[in-house]
Length: 447
Image (cartoon, rainbow, N blue to C red; front, top):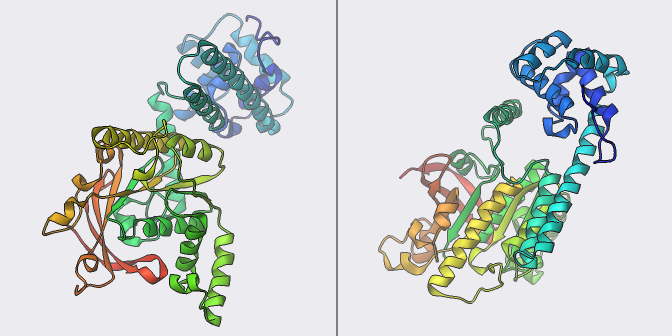
C-alpha cells in the first residue's frame, strides 16, 4: 500500500481514521452508529475512504460485515491491491477497542471540518483577489459557503440517489416513531394542518390578503404555536410593526385578553393574571423578533444562518422588502421584476436553511371590482413569479369585511390557492379580532 498521508498537508488524523475502520471490522454492531455520523469524504486517505465506502454499501444492503466480506467487496469495486489484505489485518491489530469508536469518529469529523474550512477559505480568497462581483456579492457567497460547512453539506453538486434514499428512509422512520398525523410542524389549526400536511422543511408558504384581513395575525398565531409545540427557534421579521407591537399581539393571543385593553391599560385583576401566565409561557419560548424596516432577503438569510435549532421563519410582508440593491421605490415592470427576484431568493433561502418560511403578501384591489371578492392567484400584487416560487399560497377572506350585515360575522375563509402537497380548497376559521387570533372550526368546505 502507498503512504497513507503526508501530515504536513492538511488537518487529518491517521490513527483516528484507522481506529474507526478497525472498530467496524472488529465489531459490526457499531457500523450503524458510524455510518450515521461520518461520510466517505470525511476520510482524508484515499485508501481509508475506499474501505469506508465498501462498508457503507454493504451496510445499506444488509450484508455481513467482517474482514473477509469487506475484502471481497473491495475486489468487486476495483479497490483491491496487493497490500489490501495486510492493511485490513493491520487495522484490526492497531485498534485498541471498538467501544471508543464514536470518540475516534468525532476526531475524524473534526479534522474533515477543518479541511473544509481551509478549502473554503482558499476559495473565498481567490474570489476576493479576482474582484469578480461586488463586495456584498462575495460576502454573501462566503457566508453561504461557511453556513453549508456548519450544516454538514456542500453548496450544490450531484448527490447519489442511494444516499438520498437513506435520508428519506430516516425521515420516514422519524415520522413513524413520532406518531404525528402530519409530517411537518403544526400550524395550530387542525383543518389547515390536514390540508397542507403541516409546515414542511424548505417550503415557502405565502399568506396573501387585503389590508385588515388578518394576514399578520395568522402568521403570528402560527409562529406562536410552532414555538410552543416544537421547542424550536422561530424567527419573526416585521417590516411594518415594531417589536413592541408584535409582542403585544403575541401576548393578546396567548392570554386571550382584548388588545384594546392591553393598549389602554384598563385591565381587570383577572386580565393581569392571564397576562402574567401568558408572559411566563411566551418567555419560555424561543421567539426572535426583528423590526428593521430596511431588511433584504440577504439580511434575513444571514441572520437566520446564525440561529441554532431554527424551526420557522416568518416575514411580514413581501411588498415592503427591499431588493439587494436597497430599492423599494420602483414601479411598473421594474417593481414586478424586483418582487419576483425577492420571492425567488426567499425560496432559495427556505431550501438553504431547510426550514419552512412563511411570508405575508398583499393582494391587489382587483378582487374588489368583482362581485365575488374572494381572492385569486392573479390578485397577488406585482405577482411575477411569486405564485411559481411558493409551495403553498393561502388567501384570507372575510365576508363581514365587505358586508357589515353579513350573516357570518367573525368567520374567515382560508382559501388554499396553491398546494404542492395536496388539494386546493377552502377552510373556515373563527376570527377573534379582539384577541388577535384565529381558531379552527370543525367544518370544512371544499371547492
